[in-house]
Amino acid sequence: MTQDDPAPFPPSASFSVSPLAPTPTSDPILEAAPRPRPERAAWPLGAAALAGLAAHLLTVGTGGELGINLAVWVALWGSLLLWSARRHGQTPTREGMTLLGVAFAFALTSAVWDAPEQFHFLNVLALLLALVLGAGVWRHAGLATTATGRMTGMVLTGGMRLGYGAVALLERFLWARLRGTKSGKTTPWLTGLLLTIPVLLVFGGLLAGADGGFADLISGLWRWNPENLIESAFKVLIWMAFAGGLGYPALMGLSPTLFGRATESPEERGGRLGLIETGMPLLALGALFLVFLFTQLPYFLSGITLPDGFTFAEYVRRGFSELLWVAFLTLGLLLAAYGLTRPEVRAQTTYRLLNLAVLLPLALVLVSAANRWRLYTLAYGLSEIRVLGAALLVWLVLALAWLGVCLWRGTLRRFAYPALLAGFGTLLIATLINPGALIARVNVGRELTAVTNVTRSTPQQANVWALIGLGADAVPTVVANLNTLSRDCPPTERNCTTSRAFVVQRLKEEFGIARDPRVWNLSQERARRAVLELQP
Image (tube, rainbow, N blue to C red; front, side, top):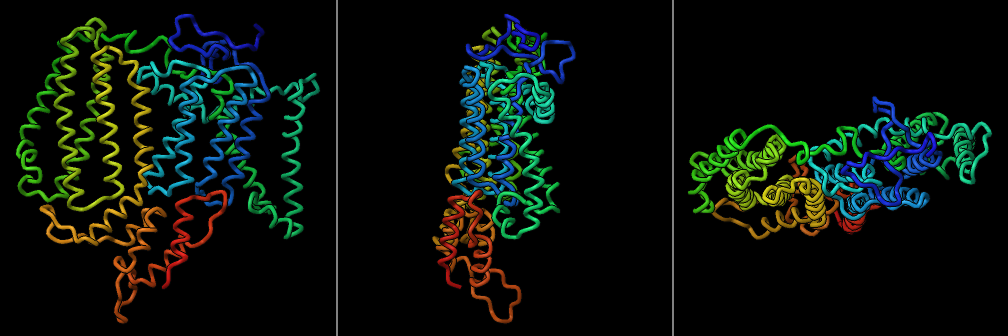
């Protein structure tokens, strides 16, 4: 082993390394104790530079919009990671490949659906989380049996490396080869690329400023005007820094987390609390849930009865979100209690029954939350936040059920990874059902059929602008029912925003213009065709 070769993990490490992968190394930026550093190499920096440049070319001039460009970039990123592994005869871990596939699935949603704003934000956040966590475990197996606290540390480590990873890649670059040292076959090409980029930037900008035709030819991919050449170069550097930070742990084979040693986990470390200290708060919480359920019994039996003095909006808004918080905090409390309890106490049947004493009444509390959601939809139809609330409720049910199984079996290390995948899957399925189109169909259908029930005495009126605000997926439904959703405004009424002519004009302004091919989206294309067929 040479001086720059990675050092192996201690034999007791719970994280195993792929058979063909290099042994893990310490992080050269944040480790206080002197340890062997990652090997110097030119290709990690080159891969990050290529990914950053591709990200700039796919997003420049698009106004931050996402479409097929996101799927293309994630596919390119995955190809670079696979190429780097193949280049060294390594095999990516199963968890790393799974998370890369999850990230690509979220990226594809931006090319197919025009998800509402909150769904879009959560999808992008989930994509980034999958990429960060997948890069951390790209060469290190064992995520499936990683404790929740350690997985949290892995996510925090990935976030930190996003900030300094590019600097670390620069420090590990083979700068000596640029000074004429004997090189291999790959380095001359990479060196030539690094020297070519600034030449093209400078001279391309000057030539574009001298000839308008040449500038128009490439303006879609790069803003070559001399005035914003520095701005474009800065954006490229930002993208390269992002790609470098994202790929740093995967390309250099670093340890997945900087927090704690690989052998540290709640199961192995254990806590100091006994059965009485842990059992009293758990038993009290279970009793509190039972008292709450007793007060809810009349509303369970009636199905639609509300407490005195409450409207449906007040009953659901003040109850549904609080009950979801109760479930989420209970999940965290049970995890914390397990980590603070002595290992010999955890193995006792009494401790396991205490966990069930909390989870079983909590299941009925979640039934109460589902009932409130049902009442709200009966009264007011669907909205984006209600669909998201239903998705969160489904994930909490799955996560708590799996937590109960792991607590009963004493295998809590197997909880975090399946719960994470369940969260990703729930969000993906909620996006696949096309929430924008679903909400539009349900709410317009309620108006067309003049739905009335015990929760409301007058038919619902769908708001055309609220439907349009759901995105392109709702546009075909709006166009098909425009006569119902718009109205004839008298000549004396000024600023009539619900007239057919005004709605058609706004629809054509927002959806009738062809989009940049890089941000092409199937739902946007369908909306554009539907809008262009409209008559004022």
